[in-house]
Image (cartoon, rainbow, N blue to C red; front, side, top):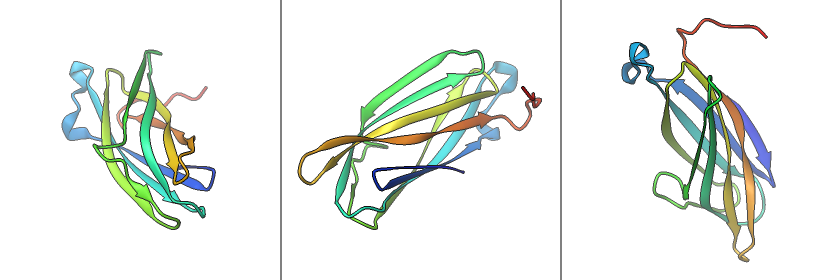
Length: 130
């Protein structure tokens, strides 16, 4: 698992390779990722938007922007958390994702929190040590 805390909001991510949805012979590899966003601060916040930066093993970059996550813009009071699962395909057996969420406080202040960088690795890929 990968975790990062920004402004008392902790984001934890756990990627999982989806063998049943992947087809290595067709250069199609799929991962799910579970995300937990926990408000450890003292103010109520709402997740407004997301940004993902996805890089495959060939160095190709995808950028994904959108409102909320999985169709929701959750409100997190102090001590509350929100969890969801999503996924991404790649044309290579490995890659890396990172990103950020735009949050809004009850006072209308918008700020960004980091999503930790996490590795996407097929269990069938030969491991290379650099």
